Length: 340
Image (cartoon, rainbow, N blue to C red; front, side, top):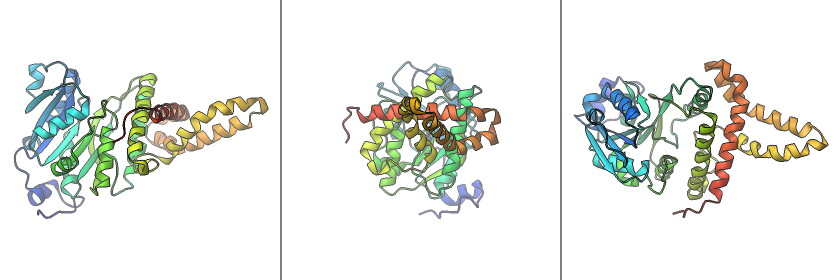
């Protein structure tokens, strides 16, 4: 077995030489894609500029759809194509066809920073079985900036934990042996939603070590309108409930969800009975509004530090987000999928 160094105290060169002795193509990067050649081209261009490019095997896994233009396809080492079944199937097809000991994932609409793969492998080689990176630069529109503030708050929470329990595949890495042991992603999730969280639950249940890599960055343009953001969060809630049904012990706890956000999900539907009580006075509405504002203090502080003009919009954003998540969770409760 290779000697495992403290990855926070060694240079990458020392790590590379003494921990795993990386050889050519020992790291695979899998990018699932579906009819998105323009964004995919930007992603592959960024991967071609990685500090570890000579060690990377870049695999594009097409989830059906159109064939890639030749100028895009030639940026990858391998291009696979299968039936349109969702990103879980595309990711599974990609990692199973790859050869690397370490398998990294990002999405076709993400642009990895030049040292993204290096930072991911540094944490994996330091003893982690799986690793999660971060989103940056969400876009210039108000809702995109608010969404990035939300991610920043979550990342601060993750940094408090040496071991985490959730990994999202926009910036993810796994040891091949872990993917083989768990079987990879559950293809009964037909959309890009919670198939990675389901895998995280199985991994933590089997005792694997998941860690956070805050320096492993990918840029991404978040949803551009309030309506698209609401629909995305509705979907998050809806598929989250499928995961909760499978792993009920995880229903109220994870290292990624701020407690204040859970309170907001409860508060949002209570606005309806509160409004009905206006006939007896304004006190119930004042109490409800006060609780909502208090619940947004951590997010407001994050906004104040990184994007101060957003501060007045944080309570509105929190209500919008909480309403979408509650609606999705409610839909998920009555969904008819069989729970395996």
